[in-house]
Length: 310
Image (cartoon, rainbow, N blue to C red; front, side):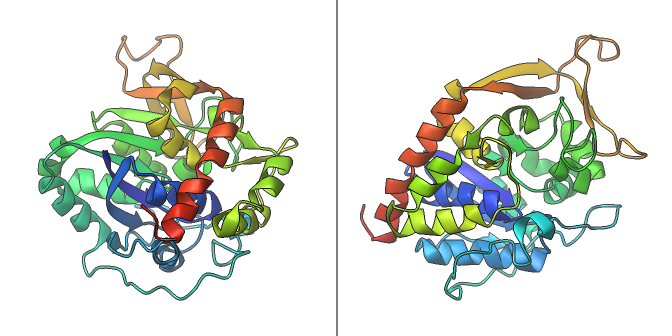
């Protein structure tokens, strides 16, 4: 099993990613942490609790994280994800509550208690992770790697150069990218290729209660390309289970923190300033057909979990 901490801001594509992670037997989820991003941290925390209740996984601890970026003002993406962050499906009231610890101290405690290194997966802004790096350096050797949804080498989705998660808190991203910890960056270069066709999304609706839930979330999702909908955050989970779908290229990547290019992730593709050093494994291509087929194949696991089957 893969021990992981998931740091998220659900958000529809976060919710879809978490649905797979909570129900795939290859994952040992040690902790879920929320962060402000697609919607406020109160709402992202509530959405994590809704999903752990939905899948009968209330034993997975949920910790509330940062309510705003390190320095800049917080601006959400409710115009894409709806006011609640997870519109379209009527989730029951959560049966569990967030733990008393804040996300950063809960991460540190979980890492320090670990008997093997833990992969930290982040699908929102990296504010919590940056604070972990700053406040708990003793916990960092217990991190196997960061798998991050974010960034882009080929243009942005909130500006001409910036991807949303990095743009939301570029100062945090800068700290993370300079941390020296092994990083896999899964950004728009691949997530905009990993589309679920509208035909596939319609077919998902027929795959039990979980298929119905996913279909209702995905059809409420405001992020749509000509050939389908990108489930950006799902790629972090897919990468951990099927890395052969992805092409990674090692680069030195810097984060721009100020000015009109704030949030840009700039790779030294020509070795102009990095002197041959590398700090990020950047996902640069994907087998999109394999991704779509893999996604549909996860839904039976979800229904088994929902029905209480082993």
